[in-house]
Figure 1: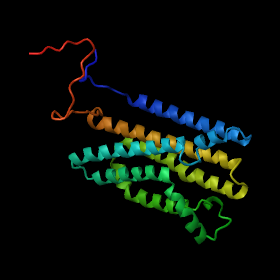
Figure 2: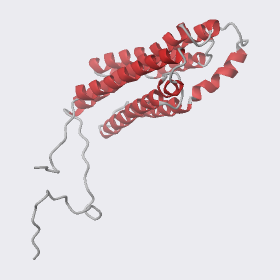
Figure 3: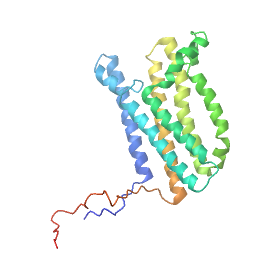
Figure 4: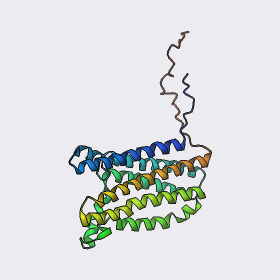
Length: 252
């Protein structure tokens, strides 16, 4: 019999395996649609599934992953605030940063920097800086590294290691593969090597954020032994309790 007070538990490994499977399916579908598109087959499917396109399934999935990381960071920030932690602000800044990255993923705001930065650099033969937004991105990453240095070393060793690995995966895709893709685009156009770097870029980004979500979930469980979400009904506005079929209600 269903009991509304019974907890519903989900393991961290279960969440990670599900999200990892979603990433594998999305990347596989993008590769398949790209191959078919090269032969002029299913152009509509390519627009829906190609990882480098906008406003499609891989884009929305990546945005949701970033938003999930931002929400988990906000939860940790609240818990650290209750403990009067000196690093509460850093957790909050990280949360806001990931929420903004989620918005950027759907709106491609960073690409608005390409034209002005490219013009400052002369506009041609830029090589790995062809997608010129990576230059301000590298500068920002440098400042962020300085700002979060003490915060990073304050973390437990396992969390610190996982955060560094997640950052390496994500930045290796978002900036490293983007630079190689830009070089290929400038030299040969958006085919061949460009398509390879693009899929590696998006794959590293998605798996990097997944690894970060895993690290955050483990960090949360380590803080309090478990991480639970409890929904409590408001007595004044809650509906009548749901009764199993066949339950008799007596009137007095």
